[in-house]
Amino acid sequence: MTRASGPLAAALDRRTVLLDGGLSNQLADQGCDLSGGRWTGRVLDEAPDQVAAAHTAYVRAGAEVLITASYQVGDEPALLRRSVVLAARAAEAAEHEVWVAASVGPYGALLADGSEYRGRYGLTVRQLADFHRPRIEALLAAGPDVLALETVPDTDEAEALLSVLAGTGVPVWLSYTVEGGRTRAGQPLTEAFELAAGVPEVIAAGVNCCDPGEVLPAIALAVGITGRPAVVYPNDGSVWDPATATWHSPPDPRPWPVAAWQRAGARLIGGCCRVGPSGIGDLARTLPGGPPGSAGEDAL
Image (cartoon, rainbow, N blue to C red; front, side):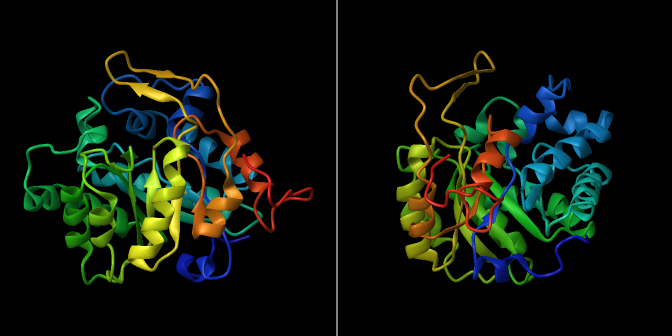
């Protein structure tokens, strides 16, 4: 089967679309070395077949959107284009429709010091736009179906990203990383989602790389303010400690209230850090149109 031919936005008008899970944890499970500042970008550069294998694992789990390995890649056009090509090949080999979302990670991700969970880098909106513009141009040249403006920690960076894309007609989703009902930089989510309201390029807005408990209230704000479907892909509930570069698992993990997320307006649902193919497979079985035995109202 060929890669999904129709616009993702049209699909969201009809049903929930399943995203993939965390790329870094899957690459680690495949035995890849993610040490150093480039993280998944290192694997993209040194072992692209491993990235392709990770994408394929998510396709087999039922993912309908593959997010590229460009999250932590700077202004390296060849690598950025490669990330889209690898995801597109996995999509084309799938037995179901699969879209490719080119990841546009935040400026802080390239600092490799946890800055994407703080924001407020000391740069102006214009400086941030100048940083992101060549990355976005290189990704678009490879022909993804949508851009994932993801793990955005503050409104300055969101404003910068949207300014680069203004008037292009390129479909994007805007996804903040949040804590305590605010952006990681501490701004109200009402202010954050207002930036996306009325922007024709934005096909969905929401949150990712956050605790699952942050999702439901964020959906209500995202949908209510933007009038667009919500995109949500939280972590598994673990907490990242940048000082020790380790994850701390939740003492009492709770099921995800996926049906409630859908009722609130989530139409792009998946997982971020520490959610692997098995978790995406479980999620697929809770969504309408999933594999035989789908439970519909179950939670992940």
